[in-house]
Amino acid sequence: MRKLLHYINTKVLFKVAHLNSATIITKILAGIVTSKAIAIFIGVEGLALIGNIRNFLSAVQSFSILGFYKGLVKYIAEFKNDSLKLSQTLSSAYYFGFIATMLIAFICYYNADAINDFLFSSIHNYAYIIKIMALALPFYSLNMFSFSIMNGFSKYKILLIINIIGQILGLLVTLLLIYQNNIDGALISAVIAPSLIFLITFVGFVNQRSLVGSIKITNVNFEILKKFSPFTLMALVSTFALPLVSILIRNYIIDKVGLKEAGYWEAMNRISDYYLMFVNSLMALYILPRFSEIDNKSEFRAEVFSFYKSIIPIFGLGLVAIYFLRSFLIDIIFSEEFQPVESLFLWQLLGDFVKVLSFVIAFQFLAKKMFTHFIIIQLFLVVMLYFSSVYLIDDFGVKGAVMGHFASYLMHYGVILLIFGSSLFGIVTDKNGEQKNS
Image (cartoon, rainbow, N blue to C red; front, side, top):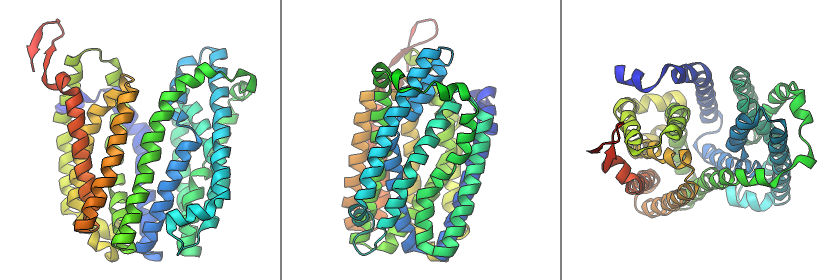
């Protein structure tokens, strides 16, 4: 425990506890309640279809905002005392984001039937869901734009309130729609819930009247856009390609094994998402800014192994507990109908453990702006996820998907270790500049 407290300084611990934990807990609880409602009113097969629309929505949303979110937060914080550069940043992000959003919304609306066939096959006709998503997409983009501005100006308390209210509002709408319309209601709620929070976020943004007035088309600056381009490329790979690969894997399970088995896989993914939220939040809050400060191999190595020694054992014990409580967790989150999901836990947990080990080191790509490396490694991961899953599904059924998850992240970790091997295991220097053998 002393090592853990030493690793996480008081300031970061405060942020995690007071700003992120409440949001994460609310999101997990909302997700569990939603999953329970889906299990009761819709069933396993419905969950598989909902998984496809959620993945597609995630990919479309990422494209609609061009991956500007993280870059916008960064440059708002950097230029907040320079009115001209701040105006250029806001104007450039707003107008190009608007063009991208309207383009993707237009494409989705007028190609709803083709997208329906891709997501649900021609057996199910949910084209109208795609059209609703297209109409709601601009509100999501405006929400993310407003949200990033408040984040850039460190309006953490307002963001916390907005997040919690948004989660509760989204949950209530989802439960109502599921109760009234079953699978159709669940699909509708999946595409509109992320946009509902815009009404709350926009109020907070409008209060910053000076910022609203600084958004001018004459202040669009292409140099600013160049600064956004690495964030756009990374977002298109990580938050666009990965969801699409998930859809392809799920569709393959449906075709080769069955719709119900695809629902089991989606249930396992949901459980995985819930427990990974905490560790992902911790890494984003601490690891990324800490790596940005480090300028030598010795400190980089020390931080990585400090995380491995203090956080990873706790995370590993948590995964062990989840494995032994898997039957109980399935009953709580879903229903008895989902008990076959138990057979998927082992490989999924192993894959998630290796994933965290890998991502701790991979944050160095972002911290040191090694964008090309990041994109290539992410593309490698995406390709491995698809082909390893497809290959193993043919031999092991739905269990092959989680086995492919483990195999892919193991290979990903191996590549990461090869790239940073000299920094982690080679000769490094101490604070006095003297060499010492690692």
